[in-house]
Length: 271
Image (cartoon, rainbow, N blue to C red; front, top):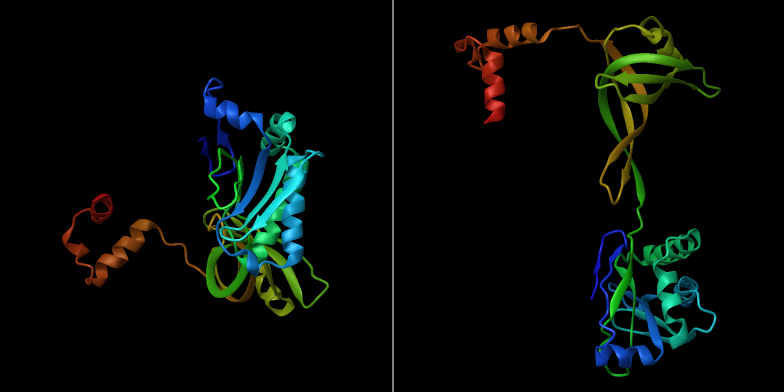
């Protein structure tokens, strides 16, 4: 059996055409199967089953294909392709086309309704009262990536640039964070008047407000989409050396015993 990659790509293996088992298999019709490994058939609405069967039929792409079965267990939906169309059908399933992407999206949508994640398209021979063993998995349906927004109170340090007057009760500005990332932000007209002197200069500000993040299910990456500024204050520019001196002076860190506290700190991080 071939190995399948995460994105539905398949590492092909050649078949031994002189193997009697292979010759016997190639003599008959071939079944193409969409198998959903989580959930049960009786949980699916009829419209979902119809959409899944329709999508599978269009991915296989053979007019002469016939309906085979829809059965319980790991939900199994299958169509049968005549022997003389088997090569074209396998090619259609594996072909990277916009048409297939649309049908895969239909399958993903139906799986997403029920919180299902694991489905694949394979070929083989379905037999009554026998567990289906695919000859080859041709495509693994990628898990549908979902997006979710959430909000939290957060402080941001950065500088101000680009002002755009809003038609509503807020004005739109851009904060350049200390790491260079630009964040779209909003504030009230009243607060904007206080911020005006700090636009497009090197004054570091600390903003306090509400951050809106976008979370993607597959990548687990967070994107800061919007920030509403409620208040701010100026941050004094302090060099690393000045910060270290101030920290040593407090005594609690015990760094006053080190001649070169920065080197000691770097050494501790390496350890």
